Length: 542
Image 1 (cartoon, rainbow, N blue to C red):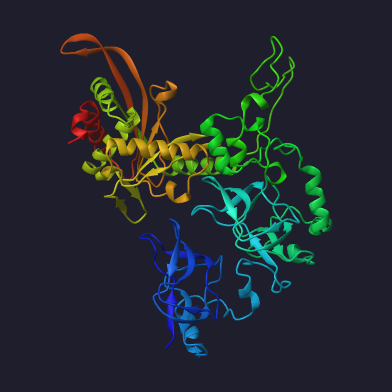
Image 2 (image 1 turned 180 degrees about the vertical axis):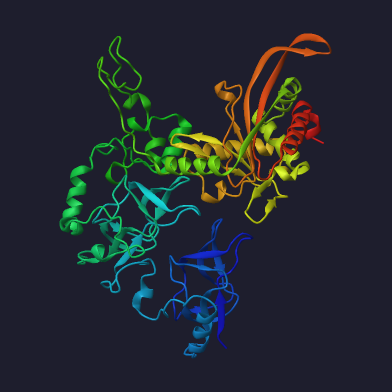
């Protein structure tokens, strides 16, 4: 007997889901435990497995489509079984399901918004959703050019999302016939990214007929001569230097692993000659790099060795336009929304760091242990949040959500802006575990190696500018959190102890609160508890 599969609730806050990828097609045999599809929730993209076995008879929600929970997702039953009544029943409870997928379109699951018919073997690849909050992406680097052979698993491009730059691999094989979004350009998710198929296939008209939600696609390469594989491949060869690793715009082509190793070794990528495709720098190039062999000539006496400055003639107005990255756009959007929707107020408190400095010095004498003052603040926050759960909350129009788990986000400055990796279940970690995790997350954040899941789910945020000498500042709340702690530098100054003026070390803490969820007295009590932990570090080890 056929079984109706509905859109599952995969998170506690999920109200609707998007089918990112179908891993089975109509007619496939299904066993219990098989992965049917990847479904995007409000928090992450998750695999959805079957609890039934039989034949996949019907798909009700196509790839890229969104539907409320409990909508008709699929029907599994016996091969050839009549399911017309079940489809009609599913349509009566929810919006009309998508048409039964029985045609050859199932042979090309990645062609989510392609024209009704495609040449045999041709697949349309669309801009993927690489994070739960991503609405558009920017192609940072193409690692393949038109005319190249593509194997399943090959990295097609590096795509910049609102959270990180990520590698996008091919799920198909063939020849790259067309590129729809050039390097540096942005487009909404599901826009035409590329076309893959057999070499020499005529794909004229496919790009022009492609739509995203009924609108024209954001493809940039739409000229007839660029659709032809040979012509575009020739153009790519003309503009790609054969003997170096940069484009005309100065971008360095290097694999993420090569970038990470170069960063760890302090190697300047501009001095490395790439041996990969089109001069791309790969891991072996960094490992075999000898600075003396590739070092540039010494500058002449008096010549500047730093990056050249823009020359500004006296009396002239000179401006420079820097294109906003996807990350910068999202930072601007979210912080503006936070500041103008959440009524912020700030509470400041000065804490003594004398005991913390003594304790840290002792802790760091333990072999293979390295704890920073920021780690100690994070640990103190985690313990204080357990005593004051209202700080660990978020606002909804109908209710205040109190989080009894503690996930602390740690603001990290990166080249393009700011990211907030999250320490999951921070309250269960020791000081040394916090230190190790923070160093790992911060290092990978700066090398753009964090996954979306590592930047989701925070319940509270810590931002520290003390290493820059900033003594006190106020942060904007990282929603949906209700509070963020700003940590200043440790300052040596005269303080009063037991009626005497002595030299002491102090640090300013500033707590920004959302007044919809946290009253002033509640925020003050949290800071008092935080102060007690920081000033008496031994209490954090109990």
